[in-house]
Image 1 (cartoon, rainbow, N blue to C red):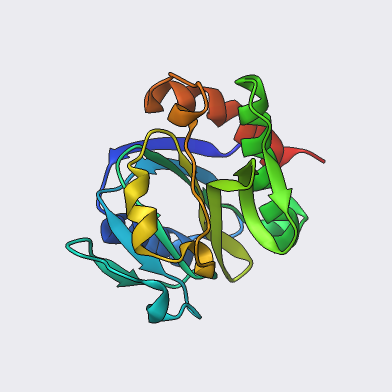
Image 2 (image 1 turned 90 degrees about the horizontal axis):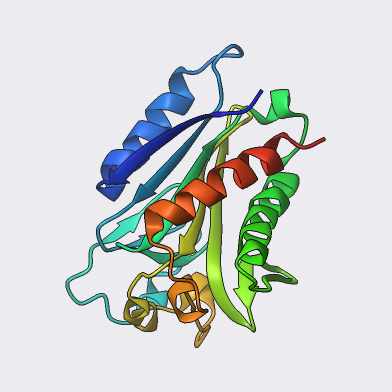
Amino acid sequence: MNPAIRSLGLAGYETVWGAMRDFTASRDASTPDELWFVEHPPVFTLGLAASPEHVLDAASIPVVRIDRGGQVTYHGPGQLVAYVLLDLRRAGYGVKALVHRLEQSVIDLLAGYGVEGTRQPGMPGVYVRGAKIAAVGLRISRGCSYHGIALNVDTDLAAFARINPCGYPGLAATRLADLGVRDRIAAVESRWRPILSAALCAD
């Protein structure tokens, strides 16, 4: 069954994070899966094992310690985040397969725009010519996932210079707007929705 899809628009990070946790804590075996698409105001988030030293100069951007895996990343306007609230036991695959499916959805989306996206061994996410365009971070609780994957559409990349993205000093970031894609974020979401749903439900 395809997950239900919700578009949240521009919403505060901590508000949406709390809603994900509440949804996951209250769901049972019959609860339908959901995908939430959202943009956030500027925020740096630190995963469970993230080192604060990877935040080089936050300036006025808030820094929030959260419960996903991974190191530090940036969220902000122009970045489209897909939060994936799945019952993995019901889906029949584990977290590594989920990461692969999330990455593949972005690779397929990029291909539709004539852009080649790739994986980097040991570095989750999607890359274009070595620069990161999509970051993955997940939490699994009681066999169910939350958090998800963030895609740079036309976000301000300057914020990534204030951190070591995903813990890698000097890791370059890129965005669709710099790769010849002129679609605004709503159009990108419309194209990504069926691709991501199909990737999550594929046998």
